[in-house]
Length: 123
Image (cartoon, rainbow, N blue to C red; front, side, top):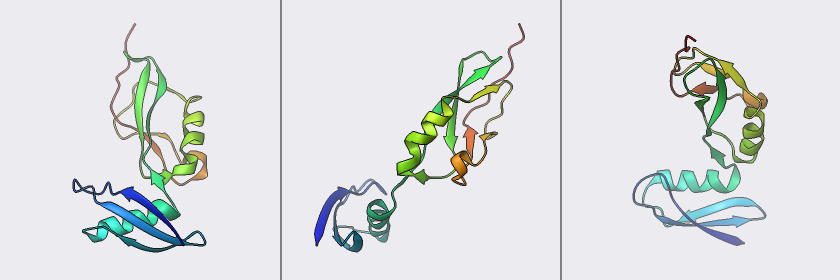
């Protein structure tokens, strides 16, 4: 048996959770004051996921970078690969907020979308 102590991030309470695992498998969690904490702890130790927020280059806009966000959570272990991929991406203005910039990034089933609009600058 092994234990891992973590703070829950599901609400402002910030409960200190103790997760018990056996042979790499989730067994139990204590310290949570709500069911969301238990769900968070189990996912965090078995299949952690994160949102991705970053920027990509944009041509023809007032600013050189366009803020983007993943439309859903990504596997934590793939976030760095996604960032490396996005460093190569360049879009052309105009772009609307919510517009898909990269569909199905790295085959993970998650789109990368613009988190703000950028109009085309007329030279």
